[in-house]
Amino acid sequence: MKEFDKIPVSKVQRATKFIKTGAKIGTNYLRHYGKKLVNPDLSKDELHQDNAEDIYESLSELKGSALKVAQMLSMDRSLLPRAYQQKFTLAQYSAPPLSYPLVTNIVQKSLGKKPEDLFDQFTRNAVNAASMGQVHQATKAKKTFAVKVQYPGIADSVKSDLAMVKPIALSMFNLNPADYREFIQEVESRLLEETDYALELKRSVRLSSLCNHIRGLRFPSYYPEFSSKRILTMDWLDGEPLGEALKKKIPAGIKSSIGQALWDFYHFQIHSLKEVHADPHPGNFILMKSGELGIIDFGCVKVIPEDFYENYFRLLDRGLLDNPDRLAETFNNLKFIYPEDSPKEKAFFTDLFVELVELLSRPFAKESFDFSDDKYFETLYAYGERLASMKELRNSQKARGVKDALYINRTYFGLYSILHELRCEVKTHPNFN
Ligand SMILES: Nc1ncnc2c1ncn2[C@@H]1O[C@H](COP(=O)(O)OP(=O)(O)O)[C@@H](O)[C@H]1O
Ligand SMILES: [Mg+2]
Image (tube, rainbow, N blue to C red):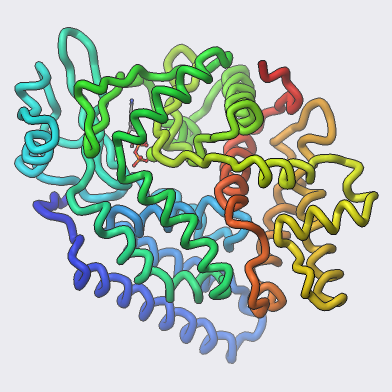
């Protein structure tokens, strides 16, 4: 693959990329509607496929926040046409690598020594792409490390990237400007945190030690002496990224134990720690030879505010749907509905979100839930696709849903998708302590 001596962080280069993407999407729509005049039954699937390819091509040449936004949106799988989904999920693996002199330079500047003076061995090439950097493997005194090196200039580019991705996101993802503002502020905060590997180190160490007791999980140790704002060093986890492993055959017993481990991991964090690894992407889990699931990448952590927690998880309370006053109050607090909505709007959005709550809370209704249930997921995706094309949502000048829900929803979508791919049954009410 082509190596980059420098990455296209300059505003002009990035703007050009985005404009190209925008133009291509426009062309695909024109092509689609041209065909549609001839064949009115043409489904939108073909259009989505064309767009997904173009967007993927353009975004995969970028790094940093643009790639993250693409992944963020791709995680919201059920809010996107399915054709986009696969392409965006791949984005993590396709960022072009940096040249070795540039890597040496970053390490020297950041840790005061060259990689070969810090370690016995250090791979010249990246062994894995990361969205804001790349991962090298290193050894010292018989230990093997993963060293994540951040691209220079990433932190500065986050804000300008987000500004440029806005027109595309607005048209592509059917988001109205009000939703987008809420969405973008929250994404921007998380992305800025993600550029700070010193913060990631602190969070990784704390959350790993608090979750270490959960059965079936493995956490690497972290090395502050080989870490900085731009470098993060931890034990190398020997195994295969879950995304890769899923393409092959995983024994049913292992699928079921890692599925349960993942469920326990997420619910312990959400309910007991009120902060959560908010990036359940198959690239962030390593299936170890032992059958345990290695957890990496605490770059994106959502801290859950107490009052949001209370309202959001009240949705799981089965009595809620039978109590209209309490339901209205909760929906108001979560901004699904607004006091100034017309009665018609109130009824419309209440029905819409009751349906969502009923769907998403199904796994919690019994002691265990079988995530291999294709019918359940079909219903979920169909709901999502309906939502994505809904003119009432698009025309609404107000954001529906509070910003704190964004990463929690995304965490659940990611978790459910992985469990679906694992096709496993999970005890959804384990004892978390
Ligand atoms: N400790 C590790 N052991 C093995 N592989 C790792 C380790 N850390 C990272 N990787 C590999 O590098 C990839 C990128 O690392 P990650 O921390 O997820 O970066 P990002 O924060 O950009 O998503 C991972 O998907 C994984 O394949
Ligand atoms: Mg990752």
